[in-house]
Structures are given as structure tokens and as C-alpha cells.
Amino acid sequence: MAEISYEAAAKELEEILEQLKSGEITVDELSQKVERAAKLLKLCSEKLRKTEEQVQQVIKDLNL
Amino acid sequence: MPSERNIRTLSQVLGYIEGLISEHLGSKRFWLKVEISKINIHSRSGHCYLELVETENNVTVAECSGTIWSSSLEQIRRDLGADWTNVLKQGSEVLCFVEMTFKKRYGLKVNILSVDKSFTLGELERKKQETLDELQRKGLLDRQKEHRLPLVVQSIALIGSPGTSGHMDFKKQLERNDYGYLYFVEEFRCSVQGDNAVTEIVSQLARIQTERYDLVAIVRGGGSRMDLEVFNSYDLAEKIALYRLPILTGIGHETDLCVSDIVSFQHFKTPTALGSAIVERTRKFDVQIQTNYSRIMELYNSKMMKCNHDVINYMEVLQNKAISYTRLKRGELHTQAGRIVRDTKQELSNQEDFLKAAKLILGSVPSDIIRLKMKEHKEWVTLAEQNITSLFKEHRTNTEHSFNMLDTLVNHYLRQEKNHITSITERVSVFDPDNMLKMGYAIVRQNGNVLKVGEEIRIGSKLEIELLDRTLVVTVASEKNKRKWQKLVTKLLQRN
Image (cartoon, rainbow over all chains, first blue to last red; front, side, top):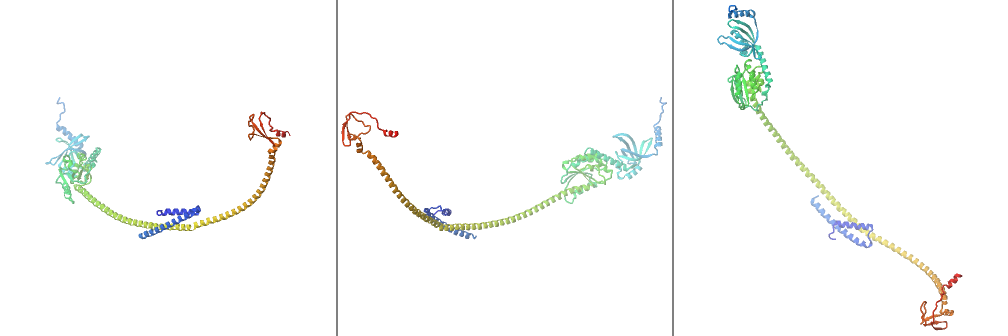
């Protein structure tokens, strides 16, 4: 989980959501998928937050 | 015979002729056109003695002696003015007022009383025209014009008579010019009037080493019209025309141009004018150089100024362009930076939205799914229950039904079987051995075993024959074939 990129995580997350929406998921897989999704969500949020911080810093440095 | 001849004396004859002439021509005076082939003035007496001729194609066709008495001569001289020497000279044609005289002593003479000035002049004109025509025919009129003067004339061969005013005027022009130009003038002295002039001029021309000079100047101060005849000479004109250098003439005369003027490279009214022209030519060159130099400097300066202006302009333009370019680029950068920030924020925002949405979905959808699944499950259970219940009911009904049926069927079956069995029993009982034996059948055994169909029996073997009430033990005596009972009944039945 440590090295997965935001892009990959977001993509996977989206896939799971699609599956949820379309009802492809079986009951067996459900909890596993939801757990995976939650993990991915957390990861993305974290990365996004960090990025926002960095961008803010850069903008501030450039006086833009 | 000598005495028969009419012998006269010379004086008689001449006297006679004298009388005749006197009679017919004595007092007659008339105009005579004639050429002077010889002329001689006696210095002591002052009389002039001439030889007069008339020529046709250079052949003398008439000739006569002539006289001009000193008194007439004086008058003529006065009439003709300074030109008289040119009129009354060898070779010139004159129109004169004459009387014929015949003296025994001197013979026939033409006595010239006066001379028509204008005729001779007219003659001169005519001769001049002839000379010009001849030159024209030979294509010499414009020969000299083919020469080119150098831009600056510096070295001059001067033909003229030193000490004469014309000569000195010319030299003064050159030596004392206003601009301080220096000229190299070589004098070739000769007389410019009189009988020898033409010869002298021609020989001087021949003497000149042409490569050393820029031009030849022929100068002569003013003179009479007759003096001018030197320069109407065909010979001189021809020499001038064919000469290797440009020849410039400064022959003072009033009106007409002489032949030499016409054939020369350039002619001037006076020696002074010629000298002055040479100086002016140098001056013109000088001025031209100065002007050119000034123009060059001017052009140079204006060009330099323009170039400087241009350079300044370019620098300005360059500066402006550079500034506006940097400004433009800065603006673009700014815009781009703004765009980057905006896009970044937008992207981050998009991602946030995405994650928020995902969260929502994750928050609701799985539970929805589960709820749904549970609902399905419940439904399924309910359905299953229902199915099972109904199944059971059905089953029970069926079972009961079957049971009943079974009962019925079993009873039926049992009854049937009973009947069957009864029937069989009956049938079988028929075959009860006791019955059979009763009927007369016997059971045959060998060694305790019932005889089978087809079994071989040896003669002499023992057999047991069971009867109803007894058993016989027999020995086989023989065997014989028999007809089968088979199908007897059938056949009987069939028959019936």
C-alpha cells in the first residue's frame, strides 16, 4: 500500500465504486471490496491534502 | 627674188599695228579679269610690271605683259588699303580697269588703271570656297575634330611670330593667369603673313615632335583681309587637317572664319581668347575637382549623419522592442502562472470532489447493497417458507392420496395375488405329486435323483419308480422310442 500512486489508487477506487453501483459485487466480495475502497479513499485524501499544502507553499514562494 | 618681196622694217610693222590698235582700242578702257602670274615693283621708279595670264585647267591660253604706273599704283594702294599686297600679288586673280597699249618699243601691254577691290575679295572668297569644297571631298574638314584634348592642357607647341602682339598676348594669357597654373610653351617661330608664311608654318608643323605636346597653337594678331589669305591656303589646311595633334587657332580676324579655322580642332577669335580658353579649361578641371571633392564630402557627411541617425533609431527601436518584448513575455508568464495556479486548484478541487463523492458512495452504497441483499434474502426466505409450506401441504395431500391409493392398490393387488395364488395353487395342486400319482403318473428316480429329460439310461441300471402308495425298484431291460404327447391338447383345441 505504501508505494501506490494517487492515480492508481483513484482508478482502483473508481472501479470499485462502479462495481458497487452496477451491482456486480457478490455478497462475499462486498466487505472485502468496501474495506479496500475505504483504504484507497483514505490514501487519496492524504495525498491530496499533502499536495494542496505543497502547492500553496509554492504559490506563496512565487508571490503569485 | 628678194626685191619682189615686200620687206618691211620692224618699226614699220609695229608702227602699223600700233596705229591699228590705237584706232580700234586707243581710247577704250574696260574691265579685265585676269590672273597675275608675275609682279614686280621697281623701287626706283615706283612702276609696277606684271605678267598677266589666263589659264584653263592650268593651261595658259592667253598671256600678256602689264603695267601699273606709279601714279596709278599709289591710287590703287590707297584704294585697296592694307590688303593691296594680297591683291596685287602673284597668283591672285584681279578685276581691273585697263587700257591696252601698244608701243613699238615695248609691245602690247595691258595698262592697269585701277583694281576692283571687291572682285579680288570675291575671288578670294570663291577660292576659299573651292578650297573648302576640295577639303570636304577629301573628307578632311572634320578630321581634326576626331582628336581629344586631355582634361588639362599643360604642354603647348606655339606656332607664331614672336614679338608680334598676337604672339605676346597669347603667352601673356598663359604666363600671367589668375590662378597660378603653369604651362610649358615651346615656340616654333615663323612668319604668319606674307608669301613665305604658308611654307614656314608647314615646315614648323613638320618639325614639332608631337608626342611632347598636348596641342599646337597657331596664333596671329589682327591683320588685313588679304593677310588672312595665308590661312586660306589649301596646303596649310590639308597639313592641319591631317596633323597628329589637335591644332587650335587664334587668328585675329573680324568676321569670317578662314579655312584653317574651319579645319582646325578648335578656333578662337583672337590669340588672347585661345590662351584664355586653355587657362579656363584648366580652371574648369580644377573647379570640377573641388566641386567633386565638396560633393563627396557632402555625400559622405550626409550619409554619415543618416547612418548615425539610423543607428540611433535602430538602438531606440531595439530598446523599445526589447522592453515591450520582455513586457509581453512577463505578461504571458504571469498569465500562464495564473493559469497554472487556477488549473492546479481546479484539479485539486476536482479530486476533492471525487473523493467526497467516493466517500459518499462508500458510505451509502455498500449498506444499500447489503440492505438490498438482506431484503432479497428475506424475500427469498419468505418465498422459500411459502414454497416449503405449500410443498408440505401438497406433499401431505399427495401422501394421503397416495396412501389411499396405495391401500386400494395393495388390496387390489393382494386380492389379485390371492386370486393368482389361488389359481396357481389350484393349478399347482393339479400337479401335486399325490394328485399326479393318483392320476397314474410316476416319478422315476435313479440313485435318488429324478430322471431328467434326455438323460441316458444304461440297460441294466436300477430305477426307482414312485407310485402313490409304493415305490418300485426296477431294472431296465430295454428302451424304445415314443411319440410325444406334445401339442396334443393344442391340436385338440384347434380342432374344436
